[in-house]
Length: 254
Ligand SMILES: [Zn+2]
Ligand SMILES: [Zn+2]
Image (cartoon, protein in one colour):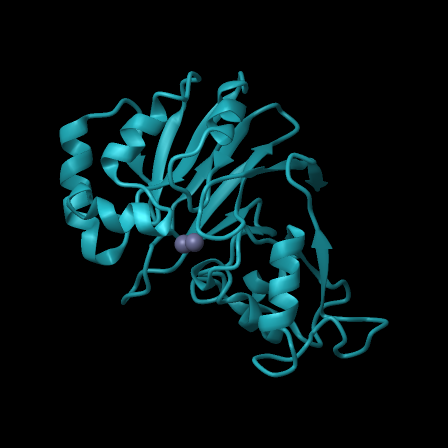
């Protein structure tokens, strides 16, 4: 599978985009930075958007994507989320106040977008990719995803999480696990912020990775802009096997 990193920043600053990973050119995993890095033609190719949780840094560009393709798509963009996510996006985002309800525009019969509810641990497929949502530990209901392709290669995206167990258990059961994309948001010296907000520090990551028994690349995302240099230094000191920072704009093949 092909994964293009559109955004991997834990905060919005110049030239850095928020969490968004484009799979095989047409499936977005989270939608923090889905529009800024893509041309209109590239945006028109995005048919599926999977939302891990409703924090804005994971969905704030979704309204603009939908608006950009309004009147230009024949099939609605499908937005996937657990019932908590779908309810929240309907109620607080596409509510005809904050933004139009594009599930009824231009018409109920031929809308610009539609919601697809997904369930924890129930796999669903898009094209030749299979996604399994797995619950993680964050401030609000959040799922990570195991993504498997038809040639049996798999990756795991944890989304935002603090210490958790199930995703590591699932990842460890994958014989062809190529990569884990996981977060380190804060540096060790502000560990209290990480604990309070359901995120990780380099020290927490080191503890969590002991739960991963399968060898894989570990790609770090979601670093908070004010903490990047300290996180880099702390991770270097820990010297954890296979750990590297994921790179914005880079396309990975797994
Ligand atoms: Zn979050
Ligand atoms: Zn986040």
